[in-house]
Image (tube, rainbow, N blue to C red; front, side, top):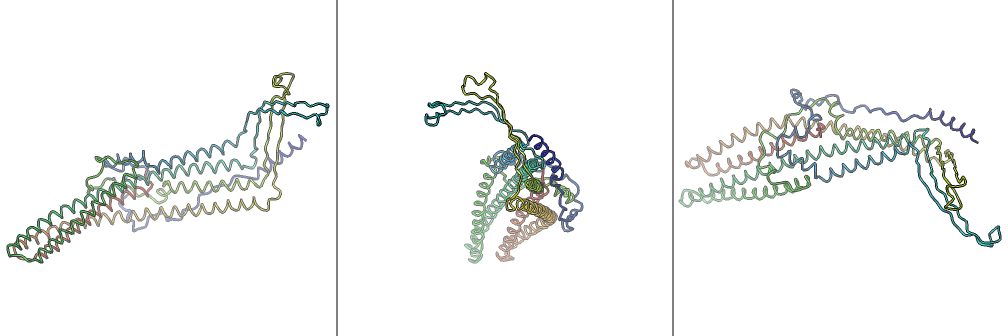
Length: 464
């Protein structure tokens, strides 16, 4: 019997040489090797890459750095992502442990009474048997099933780590964008308040002119409409500032101290310049793409496990210990006992279940390939869009600044001509409306440009 079993092991070992782990090959990149010409990356090569730039170095404002640090310590979504890593690590350890023998200690007692009618001695008696020993169980992984499952669990763990890194980068970007939005809305609120005060002064002047018989009710009504419009904007931006603070507190996870909140949107920005790099370098460093590739590798390993299930499973189980009919005699009179129970389970008929499972694993891998390629395509599009907007927003902001300067001069001259009696108040009204709208547009463009730089840092795979 022993010879037959050893012969089978030799045959199984020789067959295992024909079963290899599923080889992994990285799919070809589905995007061009250069950014689109509209991205205008020429002349932008200077500066550090996003992946090599930590957020503490990218964001230059000290208050913003403190707010981001608070978020990284208290944000609940990031805490969940960290716990997911611990869970994936535990799953990997479970799969890895199956490669090694399992040893358990066991103790048992078997006590029962045999009635007189069933006794071979003609009288009732009590049967006792006590056992103390250990049990060893080990599955011989000749065909790589356990190794493939371990590899799958390891890749899932790596994917979870990258997902956590992606969550951190997204959190940093979200905090920065909300912080900048709060600053911009405060600027708009200050602008609305200043406009209200100017409009109220104009209204009082027009009212005095009308009361003196040198103005009309139409001019007074037009001046009052501007005062009320400014009051509406004050109420609107006051609400926006409160909503922005609520959003920032939620992202951070704790109330943000008042001394860390922005008072105005810095015109020069709160970030440093970044280099675009090449698509192949940038995209392969993004944590979401790395996570998708690890998921692909996990699906690839699962094929090996499903294919190994088509072959026999060999389990060796043995035990040893002491046995006695009296508890006091467990270690006397040579009570030693042992057992050895090898088991071979060979699939013969399962109505195609195992082969269907292998096919499903291969389909899962194809799905993972498509998801990996789609992640690369999305990343390419996000970076391209951000690069296109970077140069365009800079040009637009410069033009808007020039427009604001021109309209401020137009308003000043119109006001002088009205006070000199040359023009009607309608000319002042039109100039003032145009100037106010241009000032609001400049604030919004500053916000869009700085948010674009934050987004560019994120989509370029900004360092944690």
